[in-house]
Image 1 (cartoon, rainbow, N blue to C red):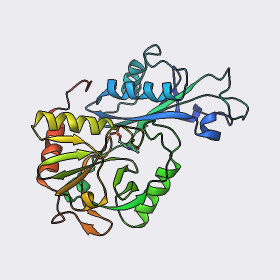
Image 2 (cartoon, helix red, strand yellow):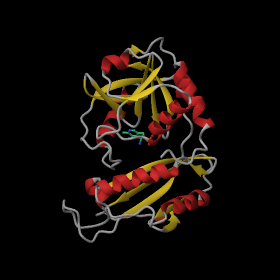
Image 3 (cartoon, rainbow, N blue to C red):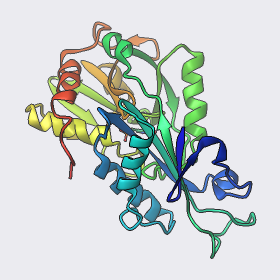
Amino acid sequence: MIVLKNNEFIERNKATIDMEDRGHQFGDGVYEVVRVYDGEVFLMQDHLDRLQYSLDEVEIKYDVKEQNLSSLLEQLIKKNKVHDGGIYLQITRGVAPRNHPYPKNAKPMLFAYPLELSRPLQAQANGIKTILQKDFRWLRCDIKSLNLLGNVMTKQKANNANAGEAIFYRDDNHVTEGSSTNVFIIKNGKLYTHPADNYILNGITRRYILFLAHKLNIPYKEKVFGLTELKEADEVFMTSTSAEVTPVVEVEGDKIANGQPGPISQQLLEAFFQYNHVEQLT
Ligand code: PMP
């Protein structure tokens, strides 16, 4: 495997990270996962714009455009002959003696490498079970930060319960998102999802689904909903770069409608590939 380290392409076994990289001590960095379909990054510019947003919010001085990151990622895909899969990339604040404040002279450290991502066809056909988890994460979920321990603990809890995902809620009237996904509900033909604020990551797939809803004349609204609306929805589905659109058929033991993936979720999943030549959402 060829790995991108800053501007250099190197073999994976040469891709070492310094013990004092702040990514390790503090989770002091940000990341992206992009999807590759047919050798091309899907919605590259939207991912790069979100990466720049995360970098700016935590004041890591790395300019995605200046570094020509899109071209570096294209080269990485070619060198590894990625046809269908993904790329993981992270940028940390760099290496410095351990101390909380931002160090003055640390140089941001980028790593990117291919991920094997296959389409979750079975989950998409049958839908998945989910559990609920009180959202105990920080209040800057809009930053795609390396601090994923809350998400990791929660995904493990879902795994232990034989569920495919856990859905976070701040209180009974406020469902936020999944541990690694955004959540949508459908009621009386209308689509609802949490507004893009500090409580959720503004998923690129979430935004793509809103774009598809617009194209397909499915009415939608970004609004907060609660646990009752979630459980009494006609359809529920989750979205992410790796899950694409995956229907949810059970929430904490309660079936959603008749316990089968619903028609609008299926319509959106089908539309997903009809429009995947779209270059940029905004
Ligand atoms: N929310 C969280 C917490 C996530 O980790 C992810 C995936 N990284 C998403 C939502 C979905 O984002 P995207 O569609 O950009 O993959």
